[in-house]
View 1 (cartoon, rainbow, N blue to C red):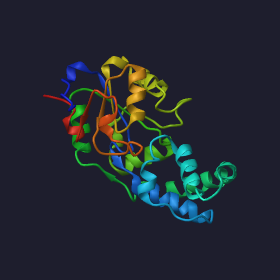
View 2: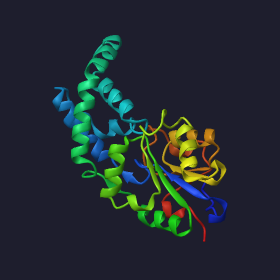
View 3: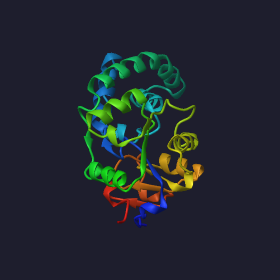
View 4: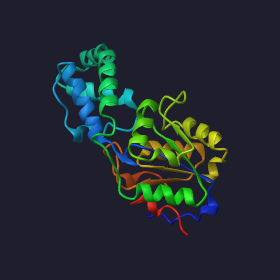
Length: 233
C-alpha cells in the first residue's frame, strides 16, 4: 500500500526517527564498531551484517555484534564471553562513535526538503530515536537538521525504548499533542509497533533499516520513498 498524503489539518505534529529515516548512519556504525573490535582483539564485522542489527539501541547492537563475531564459540560460553566483554566494548564504542559521529553518514535525499515542508505547514516536530541522546544531538547538528525540531529524545531519555509505546506517549506529552493527531515517521517495525500501541498514525520510509526484513510487510498506515511525500498541499 502506498501512502495517501495527509492534509496538514489532520495532524498537529510529527515524530521523526533518525537512523535509517533521516540519516544513513551505517558507515558510522561500521567504523565505530570495527574500531571497537580491534581494541578488543576481535575480527572485523561486515557492514551488511551490522545493518540487520541496527534499530534497537546501542546496548542491543553491541551485544549482537559481539555474539556475531563469537559465533564459533559454544552458545553458553558465547553468552558468558559477550557479557564479560561488554563493559570494555561499551567504553570503546562510546569513545570511537563520538570521535567519528557523522563523518561516515549522509542525509537521505529529500529529508531536508521534507522537514522544511512539515515545519512550513505548521506542524511541531520532534526527533525520537533509540540512539543515545549524546550521539543523536551532535549528529543532527552536524547534518544541519537540529533546528527544525522542538524536542530531541534519545534511547536513554525514557525508561524504555521503541518498540515500547512509552517514548511516543512521552514525546506527544512534550509536544502537547494527542497521539491520534501525531504522525510517527520511521523506517522499521520498531517504529510501527510503538506507534500502534501509542495510538499514533504511522508511515514508514521504503529505504533504511528494518532488521533485514521487507519494510512493506510491516503493519503501517503507508509507505513513502521520501519525506517530501508526507503532506498534501
